[in-house]
Image 1: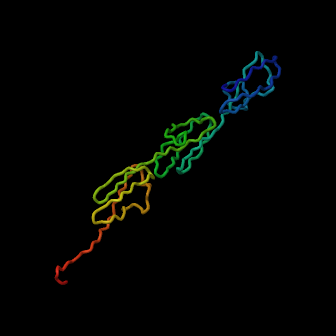
Image 2: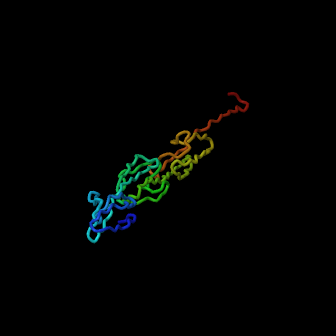
Image 3: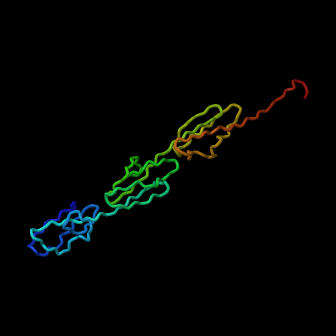
Length: 219
């Protein structure tokens, strides 16, 4: 019944037959022999030595399905997702919990870490179980640099290095960008994918001396 082969036994009518070598089947434990096919309860197994019946018979393997685990690796996401234990070849539902990760959107579960190909659910429990890995799609953000004369728009992936402009303006000293924390060099979380932020240049007017020439007169 799907297991490894077992050779037939020939013996005289009413003689006692010993149990043959147990067969093996991936994903199942052997539970004995039954007189009816499809039995999955080892309590219904015949006992050995087994009395040879008139005209012989066929005994059928009892297979007890094994349980395996599916683990979910969030690859830095939170919260953790519980391991699922289920029968071999049974259908496993998608976890109710979807992890989150700053700067990324969740794209499902993959059989390979780093893959962008998501499995479909219900997911069939494989032999020996498996680990599924979170798929993370990096988010994009729009950054606008307003120098009070021109607006430059740039698109950045989360945590990408910022290309921070250093504008110039006649009569003014550039003091930095309003809203951009001092020392920031990388993109940080702006909210949802596609969010936009505008930084505005801070200018300080330069001071110049005023020279008065009396032109031979007196002050």
